[in-house]
Image 1 (spheres, rainbow, N blue to C red):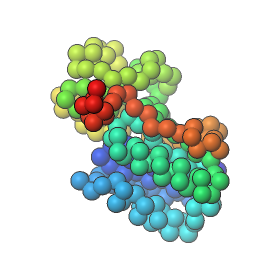
Image 2 (spheres, helix red, strand yellow):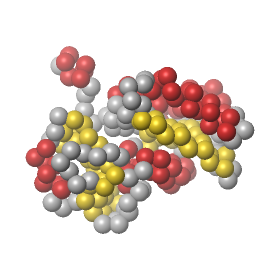
Image 3 (spheres, rainbow, N blue to C red):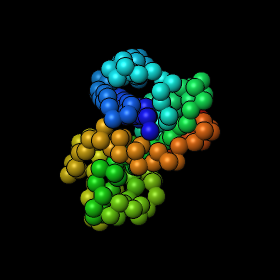
Image 4 (tube, rainbow, N blue to C red):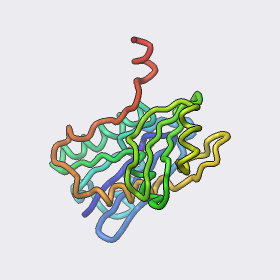
Length: 203
């Protein structure tokens, strides 16, 4: 099944295009560059590299979060736009899905740094979810580290975390869940575990 998968949830941009047996991968840290400025260029380069076009795609997939509020919205809107225009299927996967498929043995804590001593986490035991995604403070995070081994896409200050491949996680999460793709584009929504700063300010 041909697919285009993107991850705009962090301070990086990942694009995976699979056409038949051929795969094109793109990954870049953004270093202050806006997701919207790089995403379509990276997608166009991917199609050009495989001599393919958007209508060749069966499933358009995106990481739905948690992470950057703006980045997630950009990614979800992009795959919905392609799917609506071409009458194709969509698939959403979380960062925790992607992280968990890179490490399937033992008790694993998938971690996204939410800054200011806070974290987004989900627990897995031998590849199966042991507790649902949640937002935790530093104290609760420290307690979880007594039981789980943490994995993440980036180093976390003062935490002995295993850093795994963003691209590898994205590919595995999408390919393991392709059968869940839907023709209903509204089935893919941003996945947030807390309000944005702007929304918090309005409370």
